[in-house]
Amino acid sequence: MPGAYLSPYASCARCAFGKTFPSCEWHCVDFLRHKIQLETTRDVAAIIVEPIQGTAGNVVPPPGYLKLLRELADELGALLICDEMITGFGRTGKMFAIEHESVLPDVLTVGKGFGGGFPMSGVIAREEVAFAKPWANPSGSSSSYGGNPLAAAAARVTIETIVEDQLVEHARRLGDKMLAEMKRWESELPIVSDVRGRGLMIGMDLVVPGTRQLLDKKTARWIFDTLLSRGVLAMIYNPEVRINPPLVIDEDQAMGALAIMKEVLGEAAERLVA
Ligand SMILES: Cc1ncc(COP(=O)(O)O)c(C=O)c1O
Image: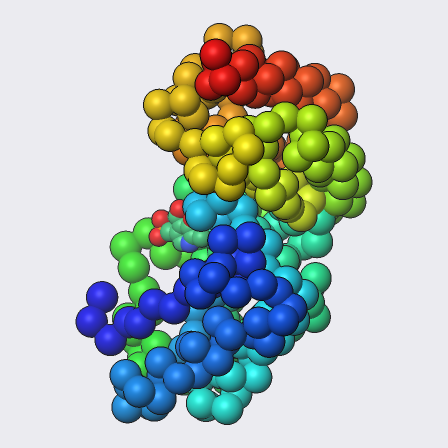
């Protein structure tokens, strides 16, 4: 998109700059600051960031990252937009992932879990931002399906269920348990590396045994298909694996699925060595 600039995330296990945290002293944030100085007019509207990077493999940045981006946005007079499309509504063990860092963004974008399966997305903004023009002009922020009453009703029931069934707490507790189990795989399974996550948003890298080189897609696809044939559907078709179970999954289902996954990963490692 014209006028949009990209900058590497604080993805420390695979740092774009080849640095190591914390001795890097937040090189990626300094890089972003320099990039803005060199490549833009410095009249920046907003910094947009995911509190945990979802599609890249559920990458959890080190604590402090969002706070630094908040400071940088303030320095520039820019808004901080946190994209909680995936992380929102309990997934990470807090209602919103920004709560892990006590950072207050100006805008939150939400969707996916918001409607519990019903198509629903939203933009949440501070009053000052929501009522600023041109956004606040008549039709400035409207769309054909915006404010759809049926979707709003679905979202309301979803949020009530998340609160009443204590699914945020459940995601935190079960996520901790799953993460602890998967962390053990780093030493037990030669193809598993960099297990990470928060709540029911867990990631790991599949690697060539004995290296940190990402596994080829064909092997990842074999793992995905084999898991599926044994009753487990997981986003493991790429070497940057994402485990995002539904918030209503119970402990037996989750730990049972991990047991099958461990078995299949072991078989995949044997096939690679053979
Ligand atoms: C983090 C994140 N933000 C935004 C989007 C896009 O949302 P939408 O399809 O509602 O534009 C996605 C879609 O997968 C996403 O994962």
